[in-house]
Length: 228
Ligand SMILES: Nc1nc2c(ncn2[C@@H]2O[C@H](COP(=O)(O)OP(=O)(O)OP(=O)(O)O)[C@@H](O)[C@H]2O)c(=O)[nH]1
Ligand SMILES: [Mg+2]
Image 1 (cartoon, rainbow, N blue to C red):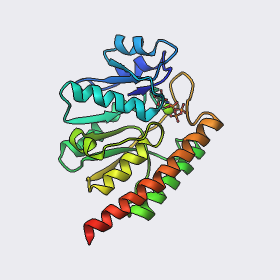
Image 2: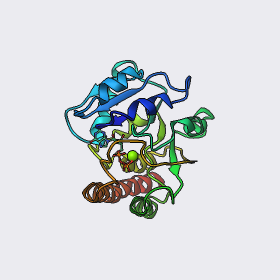
Image 3: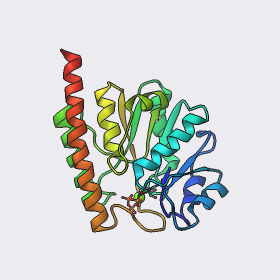
C-alpha cells in the first residue's frame, strides 16, 4: 500500500481489508509529514520508509521488504485513501485462487472516476491494445499478482508509470491477465496527489502515456519474437 500523507484515512482503509484474506500489509511511506506511518502501525500494518519519492519507488521498497521476509504467494496493491474497495478484494483474488490468472486488475466502472482519469486510462489502454494486441479497460490501482510472476516482470518505474508498466510487461512475458469489475468512490478524506489537481493530473497523465508507448512497444517486439 503506497501512502503519502494519508493520516485520518489510512486506518479505516486498513480496517476494511477482509480478515483472513491477507497475511501481512506493508505500507510504503515516502516521508509523509503527518502521522501516516504511526496510524498504519496502529492498524496492524508494517511500515517501510522510502526516501526516493514516487508511487513506484514506494511499491518497490515494500516488495524488497516482503522478499527479505520470505516472499509471498500473491501480492495485492491497494491505495491508502479508501477509493478502491478493499471489501471487494475477494473478487479480485478469485481468478488467482482458481488458478485462472496470474494478474488480476480491479477494473473501475467508468463514470464513477473523474472524466480526465477515464480519458487518460482509456488512451493508455488503447495504446497497449494497438501495440500489444490486448484490450485492458483500466489501469486501476487495486490489483493482485502472483509474487513469482511479479518478480519476473522486474518493474522499474519510480512513479506513476508503475501500473501501466506492470500490465504491458505482463503481456510481454505471457502472463494470464484478467479484469474484474470493482466499484470506486471518492477518497474518504485527505488531499489528492494525482487526479485532484491539474499539475498532478498532467504530470501523471504524461508519464502514463509515455510509459504505455515505450512498454507497449517492448511487449510488441517480445510477442513477435515469440511467435516467429
Ligand atoms: N508512497 C507514496 N505514495 C503515493 C505517492 N503519490 C501518491 N501516493 C499514494 O497513492 C495513492 C493514490 O494517490 P491519490 O492521491 O489518491 O491519487 P488519485 O487516486 O488519483 O486521486 P484522488 O483519489 O482523487 O485523491 C494514495 O494511496 C496515495 O497516498 C508517492 O509519491 N509516494
Ligand atoms: Mg485516490
